[in-house]
Amino acid sequence: MHPKTLQILKTFEEIDRIPRCSKHEEKIARWLEDWARSLAFEVKSDLVNNLLIKVPATSGFENSPTLVLQGHMDMVCEKSKDSDHDFSRDPIECVYEGDWLKGNGTSIGADNGIALAIAMVLAEAGKAGEIEHPPLELLFTVDEETGITGAMALEPGFFEGRVLLNMDSEDEGVFTVGCAGGLNTRITLPLEYEPFDYTNGFGFFKLSVEGLKGGHSGVEIHRQRANAVRLLARTLAGIRDKTGEAGSGSGSWCLRLVSLNGGSTHNSIPNFAEAFFALKRSELDRVKGLVSRFGKTFRAEYARSDPDIRLDLKEVEKGVIYEITETEIHEKEVPLDRVLTESSDTGLLKLLLALPHGVYRMSDRIQGLVETSNNLALVRTGDDEVEVLSSQRSSVMSRLDEITGRIEAVAELAAAEVRHENGYPAWEPDLESDLLSRCKAAYTSVFEEDPSIEVVHAGLECGVIGSKCGLWDGKGDSGDIAGENSNGENSNGENSDGEDCDGGMEMISIGPTIKYPHSPDEKIYIPSIEKVWDFMEKLLKSYR
Image 1 (cartoon, rainbow, N blue to C red):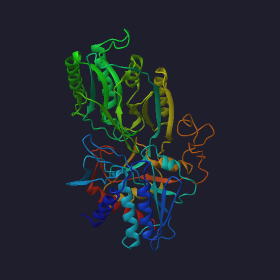
Image 2: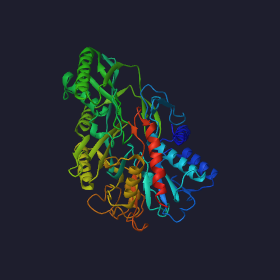
Image 3: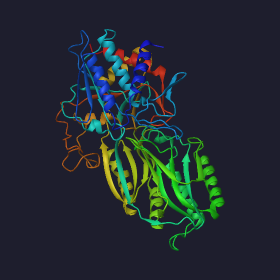
Image 4: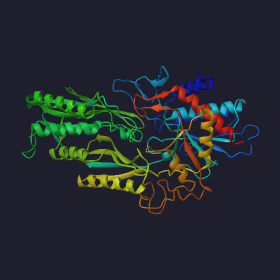
């Protein structure tokens, strides 16, 4: 193994010892600041904890343009159902399996901790005289995974370079030159409960949907993987259709819903969902048969993408919900003395069944590229309302308006309130940039093969960073929903017309190969790290 690969892996393992779920990057930011100061690098942070570390050029490169090496500090904290890992305090356990590095039942944050590790080792190697490079700015942002809000908050002048290498891509040998824009839609539906007496032949039950692969809603939405929230709603609605009818007053159904929860983050396809409900024991055998039948149906429907789908029905004495969010884990008990009214129960299930999920439109310009999609990402029932989160993406901003309008219409038909948040622009590709030409030449020179050039459906910070340098004018039909108000300002009140930069930025996104990001199966291909290193070393030398 290449010695620099070993050094990068060692650095990555150190990073994985530090809690860094989205919105909780304080500890990793302080650790990176201490590292920079230990090497006498200039470092600064802003009000939201974005970091900029300036690395001086090596000899002979003092007049070369500054290159910005960019990644994000936060990670998606996902774990398997049987894992007791606490992301707020426990170090992530790194497990080596042949050429792969993965976690022990958890995501490992290779997205995007590996970018931090590579940038740090590059800076250390330059200072030690082991490689040559132009002036570098290491731009490490916060809160990328929950809506790119760290990049959104960057102030004019925080960084100076106009050539940016984002290291948040997940296929070595692929140069990403464009990405989708996105928007989250938060739907709030009022709920009503009524008292309930279990002594009349009812028991308290839990139904869970498990065994799904989930994954990144930008990278893997085209794989048509199952959504646990949708499967749970289908099952509950199917049981309702077969076992009871509404309309004859309170208690007319054999199944009375108490709570329904699923999903964790806006950009993770839900791989787990559960519902608690009162169920008439006289109907238990019938319901068990229906649950078994739905399980077989789902496994047949998703035989290629999710062959291990399981529906688990069991009676419980009490209900405890563990809500894994972008920031922390909440534990709360499910109340045993009430159920949803029949109208609230029906409204919730119909809303979840009506909302779209998955690929909405394929690109007619780039073969195989998802143009527009949405992820039915999360549902949480509370004391007086249920919250549903949908995350939309599109490389065509008018199409982003279209799918968002459809979701809004469905929500309003269900008498729910809608709020849009965390909008970010698409990154339009520049196939004639000097940076792309240098990258292709460097890659071909080192590996004697051409790289692939792609536009991705996932959201990258390049679009937002570029918008601060004149690459997104904030105009057009999607101006309002893409994080701007009618005055052309973004959600932070900053003007996004690019006046703080002259001439815009050249950008490209690269990275080693990562599989199954945003899931407990996340893993990184170790040999690809060495290839990224060799390519970067060649590219940096080209700027003499």
